[in-house]
Length: 473
Ligand code: GLN
Image (cartoon, rainbow, N blue to C red; front, side, top):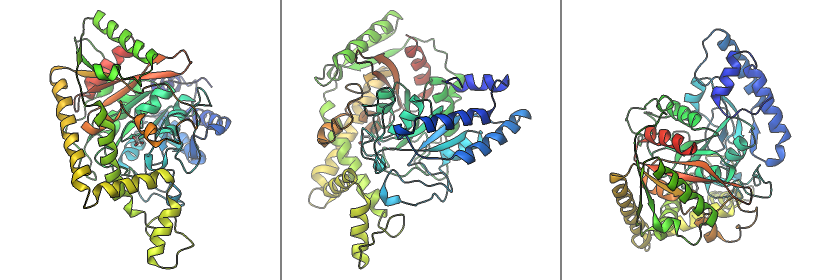
């Protein structure tokens, strides 16, 4: 079967009967099998996907199929799907099955998407390389010696390797955009409050957002349109109308784009990414857009504020995994207390433990003001300063990652270095703003890299249409 890159191509072939949904699913299943060594899938829902495919074929024959007929999609293993296992790639959720489906899953299924399986990720979405999974690391299909990025590494690899058409991930500090950059894909993190988090296993609740990995902006916009919007199960959701993003992709207006000097001059930024960044800026200017350089003297505060606040939230969110309510329980416990301590000590991996300890520390009575309160204040300043630039500009253009995908094993020994991988992505999460990584570059080392567009709150329509212009430059 040909390698499809968009739902439109698939739907054209479904309409002309060149393929059926069942044949499509069979072909993906075969490819998943052939590419097993990439370790992208933790579980494939093969027989169920085939059954659903038959039903959707029947609906298509009667012209009653939903808008996502032919969309074969994978879920990051932190998104709940009723009656299916979900583990956040952690041993502590061993054997746990979802009792309900995430709102996003229900909405996709209602439009006849097919869910083909659940995808490997960093444990509890903590990581930048997918090397923190309890089920082994994931390979980058473009160069199998390299990481796919993280934490949604399985989601990125699955799309890049053609194991399904699109995947869902979660982005707390870059976990969609960074792997999208490393694997040459479109990676979308919507505005905080745009997509329901109901059924997403929480890492840091005031940062987490579900988003997509796709080859095209059309597919990202269509999936968002279907997933977004009010949900009585998530009170942080906005009641703002959900536009028909996928119908509003044509772009005409002159746009004001800002970029930060300190970001592009950062010593950690690969010179080839920097060069490409300025090439794109030149092209935008030639199109008649205004591109202005701004100061943002806060770059060094982004990653520390992110790690203080997210670890604090994580230490609280992960308190529920106590060996009693869910999944793994230690066999070595002798009483209630050791049930807690041993189940947690044996069930969580090293990075998750590090973050729980860090988070507990920054929330502890003696240090709360010095770290947690301080970081909250920094978050407010970052948000205000970012919105200030966006009050006179439509978008901020920035790199997604400081370099292309690194070698497996290269950074695991140095957590601080690993945390700095997130330098360009955490701003969108600290501020709640929407951001999209677009595959805009190819390095002389043969690996792709993305550039990132960050927009105003709830301005995804403009972001998609401008992204479409950008990707065609
Ligand atoms: N790499 C970041 C971290 O390790 C981002 C994770 C995420 O977005 N889930 O926290």
